Length: 200
Figure 1 (cartoon, rainbow, N blue to C red):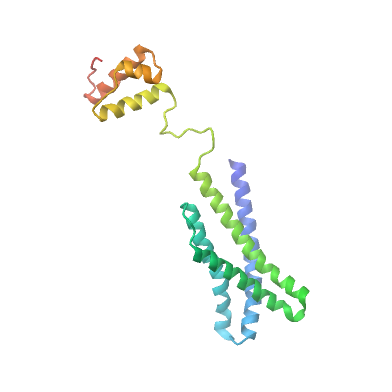
Figure 2 (figure 1 turned 135 degrees about the horizontal axis):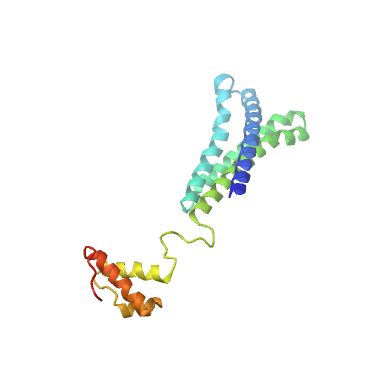
């Protein structure tokens, strides 16, 4: 478990580092393109946030749907695609004046940001699934671990319902010796009667 946790947190740290660097470069490219096309000043500096912010917002909606095992809204998928397309386009435009090779290089930070963020979402989804589905071989505490424990739980349930098992029924249903079934039944009846043992 410690090894799994170390691997997971190392992956998270690496993904966050790449995403942070890529986001800064992508933001600078977007600011350059936006300000060069008529949105200077504060508006030009804030505008790129609407692009990458849309990717983050849509991804979080998809993550929330996945964690609750619900169908993801189509709008979230559409907006995620639009955000990815927009951030790639603006980064390509930043490098295009210097040629197609420069445009390809300039587009890399946008792809790295989107990819890193989606990797982070995959790690979170995987952690949620592991928490919801215990590993094979483990028995939840609420599940009886033996025939005797199962018989005890069943006896209590049938007593609460007003139709308690007989000793013969317990013995037959759970494969218990007749003596064990009788003792178990008396124990449950005693619990229900103020700890005064009753005979079967």
